[in-house]
Structure formats: structure tokens, C-alpha cells
Length: 187
Image (cartoon, rainbow, N blue to C red; front, side, top):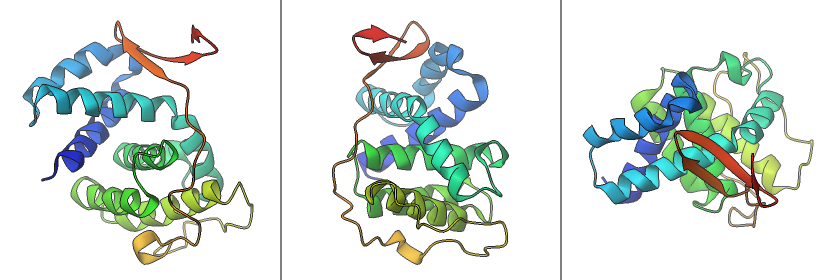
């Protein structure tokens, strides 16, 4: 398994834990990585990626809920939430092109998600990324519970997947708490 793929897998698992255990438990979540495959640098990269995705979850959750109103974030399985938040963050932060992020997310869903997770994640991420890279156009259709296989295979997009996206504020993960630096102060 490639180093980037391993970091992404670890980040998804950390994001899942942060979601379920709460951000106040970050020290023990970070310590739990000691048993995970990979070295300390991979663990640190995965932790930073997970924290950054967690800090930007509201962007992903809002857009996902808007595009899939029958499956708002609070109704999604925690693994699916973690995968969607991670992939969306990777694209917005410029860590991965849209196609790569979607394909990797679908692979994670096949390995860790439910039977319908890969199709749902593929469809919703494709629409989320198209919406984000098209400047917020409201022409993207909603994904409904009756859609048997939302989105297109492979997550192709007419928009330039390498287009610059707004970068999130820097994050800090110290003392067991996840914070954002906004205007020079920690929130």
C-alpha cells in the first residue's frame, strides 16, 4: 500500500474516532495510533489531515445535507461521514485532485463501509465537488433516497479538478483539543 494511501486510511479512522469519541479525547486518540501500521511521520501526517478535515467538517456537512436531503449528515453511518469529510477536505485544501479523492474515498467505502456506501459516497462527493469548483452554482441536482446509484461512475467532472479552492484556516492540535487559528487568535 502506498504511503499516501496509508496516511489517508489512518486519517479516515482517526476522523471516525474524533467524531464518535469527541474532540476533547484527542490525546488518547492520538496515542491509539501507536499500534497502527506505519512510522511516526505517517502517524503525524494522518493525525494532522484528520484534524484539518474535522475543523472543516461544517463545510462538507452543510453541502452534503443540501445535496442529499434524504441522508443528512446525522443520518449517515459514521464511517461514511468520515470518508466524505476527508475526501472533500483533501480536494478543497489542494491535497488531491477531485478524481483521485473520489476514487480513494470509494475504495475506503468498499473496505470499511456498508454495501451501499461506495455508490452513495461516489455520487455525493461528485456533486459536492462539482458544486464547490463551479463557484456555488445551484444547478446540481439533489441526491434522494430513491436514487439507486447516485452520481456517475468514476466521479468525472467538467470542472477543472485542480482549480484553486479557498484554503481553510490553519489548525492546531495541542493539549488534546482541536482549534482553529482565525485572525491571529485561537478559537
